[in-house]
Length: 137
Length: 137
DNA sequence: CCTTGACCTCAAGCTGGCTTCAATTGGCAG
DNA sequence: CTGCCAATTGAAGCCAGCTTGAGGTCAAGG
Image (cartoon, rainbow over all chains, first blue to last red; front, side, top):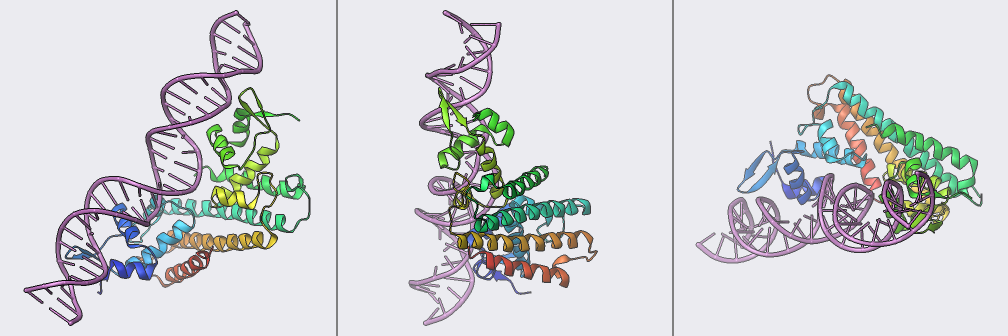
């Protein structure tokens, strides 16, 4: 098994070395060994980093990502909790969709004041309902 | 037109008074008047706050939200930029969908190691591609 | 008129997620 | 063997987005 220098991991994953060390501190990833002082990472960290990056992009904190997938990339949570996460994601997706629609509406609707446009208001109300649902997590 | 005390706005919108003052500092909302020292808000701030809350939930910074909708709730950006925003949102939605699918897969697939499951790897690669696209904004 | 309590301002503090810096170590090419 | 250059550590710093605290104001009810 070939091991990777932190610099190489950084380059391949697009994650800065300082961030990688930070992740290691937090226990999100683990280095396989040391060569002298230097961390040597196994190739699997690249996949784990994809997972982390994806989770972050999805708006989860590092702690939350760590909770979903242990540092081995295995799920740490029971199935029902994972599904609950997925449900929360679905809710967030609905919210984003509302915002997207609202944005396109604003871009296209020639009404003078959007805050008074009934269509727009409906969109917003839908959004705030979604927000409340999501607040539960 | 009836004006609202900051406490009432807080209660109705679910946004803390301190946050409301902070938003005002940033120019995201404006108080219509003062009664003595006390801010008096027009009722339209409630709608504006929906917008702000929605934008935040969608992962935009306050600055970005401010850019999408001025403090009057009117679009501040030219149409094409608004559409560009909407496109970015669509990309983010795709990412979230990938994560959601990955999560459900992890919850349901009985494979011993997900990082080695081909289905899962495909999901992740799709996700990292999306991530690169989105990095452009 | 006096008290109460919601509001005010300004400054400092906090969390998350890193980055930067200074001082040091050590792998490896020549 | 030498010297370079990448990597190491620990502490400090930075930004966003608020919250908290101290000390002050004032509108309204009794």
